[in-house]
Length: 276
Image (cartoon, rainbow, N blue to C red; front, side, top):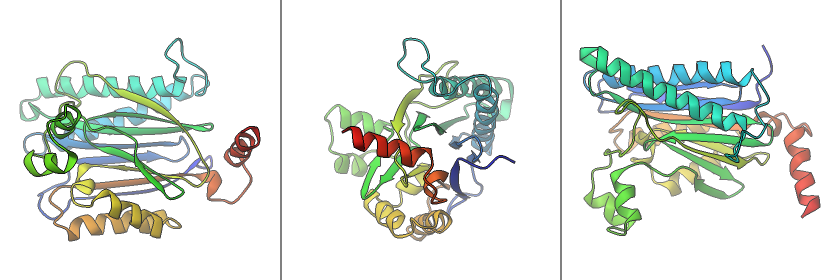
């Protein structure tokens, strides 16, 4: 087995109210990939949708990355090849969830959100559809990297509500974009430069609906030395506050910053600082 390029903690919990877990969270530390999908639909159909999406994305990225340089620019998009690989994988997942929903009666109307991160070189590519989130802890700065595709966010963007007012007056679980609802879907893709030691958090809304960003930040900072402990504590907090939904937490950190060696990321960041 090749050594993983990322350190990963992955916990998915049913929560306190739901009869079964409709989230799917998969990781491949050797590939540098993490995926969280939050399914929705009739009895167990959401579970099917999220599982289809997560596994198909994993398989597509594994196949796509070995075919060329992940860091190479891809056409006029300004994105690397890695970003286009995960974008296309999410689009294929959408088509497969949609096809299954059309052909299998008990799966009609199912869908899923998804967030994907893929580490390559000194960058991380991020793709998402729906309201599952990616956060980043860099030093003491904690930031939401993705923008929710939700009714709450739409109302905030249009100036109808402040974030606080929207949370009080709008149902939290109304997404404006998801996999499997239509034959095609718009996938938001972005790239971020990596810094040694930073932590990325992927989560379903079962975490951030129960635990506010400030408490997530404090918890990650407190347990940053041990990602498994940090993920366990975040899930515990969500359950302690009601656990109204399934809770998936995936924490990812570049392995270079974990083993203490002066590897590529450390050297790369040092080069940037010298040049500034």
